[in-house]
Image (tube, rainbow, N blue to C red; front, side, top):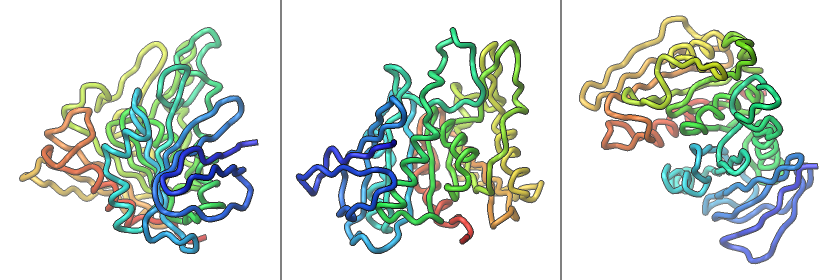
Length: 307
């Protein structure tokens, strides 16, 4: 059983224990930390509800995944998403990843040899995000047609993983300086073994042209291979059935190039945004782009088609 427990609440002093399938009283506005147990693993997550939340209205949900070594709380402060959520009436969630003693995500496809501790295979972060989504939908009035996920660096790899494995639950995903990757075992499987998403899903990929950590052209080592940024985009363009040729828009003043692939199934779109003056860091306005605003605008335009 996956158990959620409110462990810290800014606006309430009582502790509240919830199960993923249980009905629970609506929580009031503000920040609180919850924990989730998936198998033998226990993870923490910071959630935020807007001031106007009364428990009856469905709220868009934005899940944001931190980079390796960071925390959900640090990601909340860096992105400024909570202030945007208060303004627009959204719910936000910032889970903490963990592999051994390292704060990161099990985002790669494929399995490594049992004696290779590259990433802990028993840490099922897809199950963590699935449980988080289902709990916030069932007990906290998250809108099932407006669930979004984004991440930075290691969290961006995980956002791509969620966009594939949980596309039936997620309307759109945002990737900031990340890629799609797969583990190799004796040279197999190949990059072509990365699966297609289980349902149509919109994707925006933001990358810094000066990023030296996540290579634009992808990488291959004896243990891991990652797709190039264009191949990541084409993975979802083809899966969604978008137009093969994207519409390019160049913002020379700010050094930002955008390519939008439209016409996908269920209204999905895929967009690539290249920031010329940005490296691996989260883009802020001095680089020519606010990644937080860019992601927010994209998500607002891309709810999941009503089922």
